[in-house]
Image 1 (tube, rainbow, N blue to C red):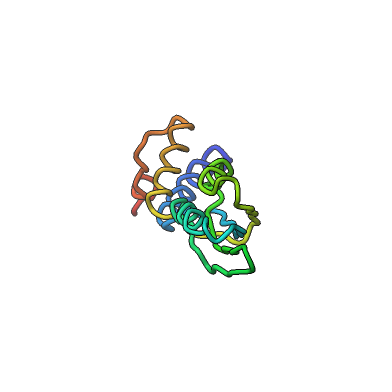
Image 2: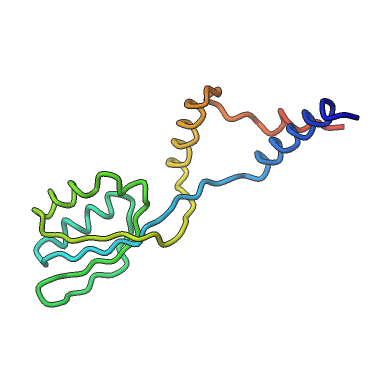
Length: 135
């Protein structure tokens, strides 16, 4: 047999296996550190949590409080003006990549819909039964 007979069968088997494997979407997570005067701690913390972030610790060092936490990378786009606005420019923050996490179901569904739309695919994900033949 040649590739013309084998490739369609292999393609269907691989696509079917992708769907039966219950795939998940992983998103990159930053570790964020914010140094801010004590009067702006609430605003900084609420901004991080509004952006799906988690606060790990808050430590007072003299006049400044250092907030440490995790925040999804996708949520940090445009965070600089929001942080400046929330703290009147008193916060100093930095982010560095820390790990990957499973994206929440609603975020994953939104990403999948955007990708399917961009590629011109139907909005509904096909069932694995469409690709798996039973004997």
